[in-house]
Image 1 (cartoon, rainbow, N blue to C red):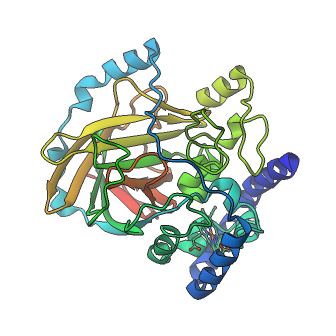
Image 2: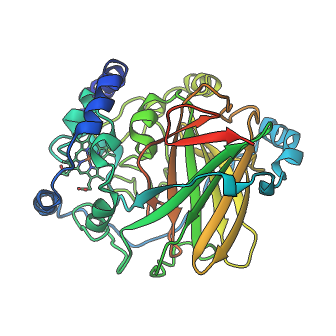
Length: 375
Ligand code: HEC
């Protein structure tokens, strides 16, 4: 099984290079799949996987790693990190709406398993997740949020999706990403006592091929905390397959040697994430970090976040220096970045969030979902 999955993953990465152009055309032409059929599939699945219920919810924080290098890098850009989002005239920027949906416990390993996800084969052949799922996010979220075959502990009355308006811009020094969303009426999940709402952006610059194809799913594994194959009593945060000695349907526990992982990190083969933790009436708390063998949060974030709330609608502006140094993605025109978005709402934590499909970002001009034009 392990070998099969490792082979499959390698194959996928090669197939991407081969089939990207064709895949995109095919994706544009593909008709949306039939939601009624999905419901049937879902209920079949619930029979197969009926025994997966897991114990109650506990909350564990992220792992904060203190390293002199990180602190030094953070200090170097501290002055810039405080730069104001008002530098941008947002009235000039056209927003684009995307829908974030509740993914339940559908891990990377699950969506790659044909018997559990009929898109697996076509994904291997080179069709990206969005090629089949774009436009279906709301329906998928409504299905998954209550589907006990893939959600062991549904949160009663939780909405299935959240719409987000995204704007991007840049100036000579910084990249700005502004998101506006209203999570609507949310039940209180009681997991994150302090912050009712959190919003995050995941970023890759082409160094993590599977992120370009599957966005956030590249980091979502079956053995993460509160996922179906989580090891009892062990906290496992997001990671990339390349950091593991082997990966099976249950994800991978054993890490590759540290020297190999450090080499990957030095080569930029990690994801970067930004997060804003939100509470009405309080300034946003910014956090950021990287994902490779685990999620590593910076002691002092490179990203700045400013937020305001009115009538339930949050507007959050992230900004970061274009070149913030080590362990952050350099932003430059002419390159296509993959971005994914997530929202935790109703005091939810860990996997109980809404996520977007993989989206693209360019600076200045080009073909992408979001173009960060210079101001
Ligand atoms: C070739 C089209 C195709 C591709 C590519 C594809 N899927 Fe699917 N996906 C489907 C179909 C069809 C279903 C419903 C039937 C099933 O579950 O097998 C589905 C179901 C799902 C569901 C459950 C929600 C729902 O609406 O049923 C999720 C979540 C999902 N896919 C995620 C992904 C992710 C993540 C990727 C990329 C790694 C991906 N899919 C790639 C076709 C696809």
